[in-house]
Length: 431
Ligand SMILES: [Zn+2]
Figure 1 (cartoon, protein in one colour):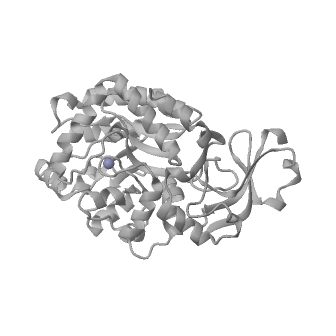
Figure 2 (cartoon, protein in one colour):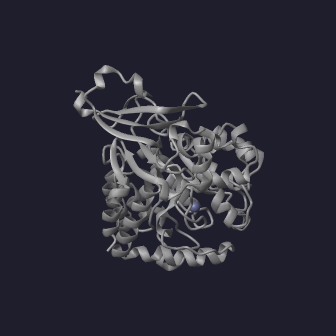
Figure 3 (cartoon, protein in one colour):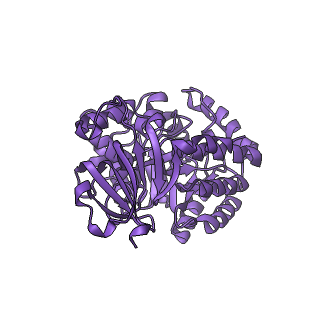
């Protein structure tokens, strides 16, 4: 039995489900055969029953829970432009999304995207997928190869779009439901379907209602954007003059459920927040994207007061880069009084809770899935003894200086999906 276990030595840091955090300078993490965390504690207290476990010695490194990204767009991966005006941004982004009608393009970008997620230490990600069913199918197949924990759906929109992206709502839902049946729960549960719908300036009432009904029937999640900017909100109120507010519209069409993740949630009233709380909707806080598209920010404190689950999203397209560490830094910049422990929790356990996965991932605790990253702390010299450094300083170095360059190894359910040794091999797939 013990041979099937792997014992990792290193400095362990993790938020805890019960609150606060755990810092073990001489830490030991034991991963079982099924990829679960069998035991966590101090090196000298490892139970005798694990004495024959395979040992991976990472003393001098930090072992952390895998980063969890609540909001991402696969199609925007290759597009890095700064276009603050919403309408001009949409014009450009529609062209980028239409390219996914070409499955070779879809395959190439999907490979790059999932490889880069892993390289940035992201073990779980909630992704707005391509517009087209064939391209979404390709993206799921590559997500499966990546070994990552991916929640994703085909992005649905049926109005206000160029002809290349226009679809009728009934066909959209039929395609989405077929893909949900094909992929939801696959790869030992690492893949999940998430019904994905454009904001209501690109979605009819019929589409919104059909998305809500299909998600309920399949027991699946829903994701969309909410209160991202005032121009979009104005368009929605013009298109649905009787709705009163964007939140009302989504609520009345059934989009707001305990399995819904809404990104941004910037331009909302206190009543809106209470409505979201009543429906137990989660919010993907995307501070980096918000800073780059005008600077208006989500009110984290109002959301916390309403007891909403809030995770972090990197939001490619509006945001730049895939590193959750960068979003942690930006979360500190836009909400005063947050500590590095607060934002690290938000980008791991907080995001896991937003995705309804907190019982399984987000922290290093016995019984959870062994989704973790091994990190070389930035700003340390080779002569520094990592176990003797203060944890606040180590964590701050990650939040303010961390990115893909400090990630050495990434494991999902106990299986290594990225290491600096295999980075070249991963990139060779892109050819
Ligand atoms: Zn987005």
